[in-house]
Length: 202
Length: 202
Image 1 (cartoon, rainbow over the protein chains, first blue to last red):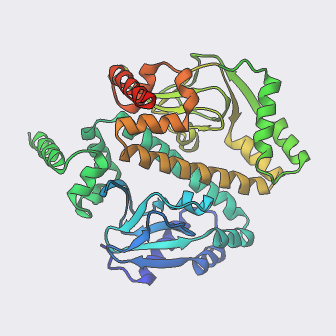
Image 2: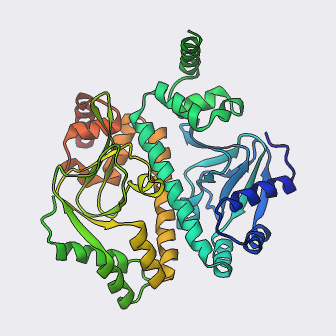
Image 3: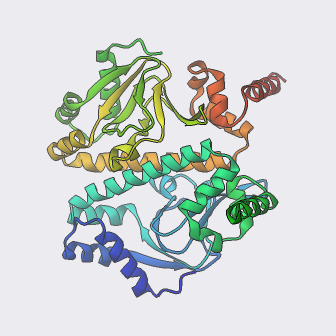
């Protein structure tokens, strides 16, 4: 859970932008001045099924959980943590109703973006277009890799991959949500963790 | 299987570029002149595990299958068909060895792209940067949606989703590769198809 103030969250964003290594201090400042930061308290929704999102998000600190409702049951389909863009994309781009729900799994700082803000910033800093494209491509590659890995893995391997990808997640969200994401029951996850722990101790 | 000539494949690319609706005929021609088209015969590899890819691909006609080797067994993790960008991204961007294999599942026409070609074209047509970014974002949204759908679905639902997303696939690749992708045995897929067929007939 983040206890950060807005000023601290803005510092996180500043460091992230700094890592691009291609912008002048003035350009960085311009982006910061045009960025809207928002704190979602635990349990608050960023998006609900059926809504049309006008925004895209980017996690600075915290965890956003994505789930789909299936016959009244929540099926967790993604966790977004630090430096993850949050999937409201398709809804924002195609202006179609969202199929997913996005909820803050803990107090979470995000940046709130939109097509028009992005466009305005790219007009002021033309090479930002190139930088954003490279970031999106990098992210697409990561997503494709994780998708392929998910398909190719057993639940036990998926659990171990998640431990590597997001080790902090296990302290942040309840076990039954992780089990739902992995496609197993909470009891199976519990047995799996115990078995792997015993292996480590040997 | 494509029987198209290079000229016909180039026409497919021209129509695809035309759909962006933002380029002049001269700009479209410039992109076409800078595009390398290649025919991969059925069974030819675009990428093998461990190789570092310098290229990215885009399917004009045909099917590319992606698989990961697991204890000597091929686990199919994706099928790329018409207008799909082919995942050699992460390998191309990070210059890291590929974890996946990419093989032509039938005779397939692709465009062969690279960072340097893209860069050169964007310098000549600056707003191409914006167009490509939007295309990549759209694709990321699609990928995220399909990933979430895959996680949230049973094998039977995955089969039905695939029928909607890629109806032509079932005539193009052997059933056991589709079963591998769906995470079930070929026998289960066969039973599933029979069951759904009987339902339709009722």
